[in-house]
Image (cartoon, rainbow over all chains, first blue to last red; front, side, top):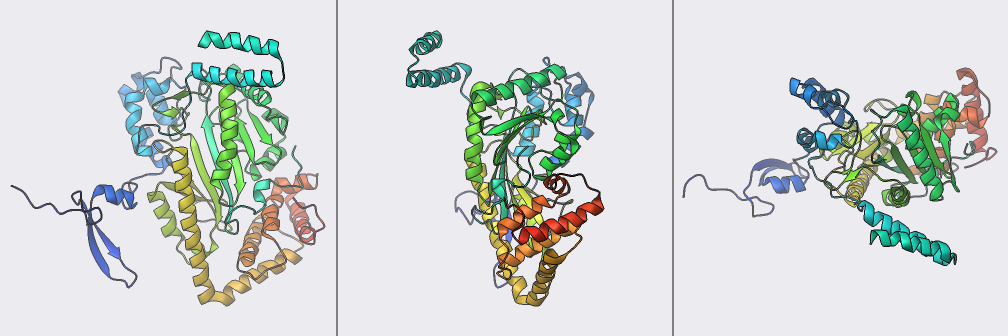
Length: 159
Length: 351
């Protein structure tokens, strides 16, 4: 048993407290609260604090261009990473692959995350099928059976 | 062009909290797979994007209730007119790229083609109503996404020219009137705490907090790692909080400075009803002051919808298109005052 006794977070009573915050109640009394990083983030107390405006992040990028950046080139649109840093815009979707390693830390700085969790786009095949199903339904409703047969043939290629 | 005497449906002060929140806006950034982003796109690629989007809109029936315009067809005055109505961006006007615009009839749904990204979809709704705006934009996004192949990957979501938009590609924002927080000098504190919560707030007319009329736009900064619903919920929740702070600030003001506030409001009211010359800046200030007067129950013969409409119609390009003539700034000041007076008497066409 070594080291100092770890104080537990006063909010979740679970994780070790890593932050001390001052709280002012309505009567104007200041009390101190020891909390963990997790709870501080949940309360919106920290985590976002270091969040800079987009402009600030992009400006800082432009200041830190090194030689390596000029050699890193997107094979599709031939934009260099140095070029991206100075203008803050990528040249094509392939840039995200070509510059991935260097982009991820930047994305983390901007978004505090580096993985998409929102709306999903189906892969090409599934989308085409979904679309063909819609067209098929339309053709049947209009009693256009010749077209419906054609659509069914097209669907077979994907199934 | 859309009817110049009418304004968008999103200005009708119909949505929730439309007393303080003027409107909500969702914007989605999308690019087409296999075509360079605008920083690298050739003239030919730009044309291809325009054509693909136009065809997709046509195919999906969006042109039945809306129209597709190429930027070259639009005069500088028309461009200014659209900018004043929040339907295009300043960047859209100045760049020489081959650009286009889709606009539905009631101006609640639009798409800029070849702005910073191949597509910038936009939906507007009245009041604090982000979910309604999202529902509308999702319909357009799904439809276009079926016809076009979007640049998308599983890990990073929708790929955008600027990495600040990657992921959902979504910005959810609302326009809010915060005179209470500005007068009580609490606004700085609020803007700072919004930034800490990952939101951006900016004055609509002018830079930073040096705003005319105390109108602000608040939006999410983060587009990656949160789902669309999470972003909408977060921005809505913060909107409701800001709203309650504003209401409290107004109560404080009314307790401490009732007479001063009443005086300011009724002076603005008098100017609005009687002025023979009105500059654009003065119009914004007095319209918003009267708006506050309506909220506080002091003014009863003017509606919020009338104020919202006048805020748009009194802008320089809208005014000229309304009267269908080009005017010097001096002529505009006279016509602006005329328009306001006749509009409030119910003589001008209401939106």
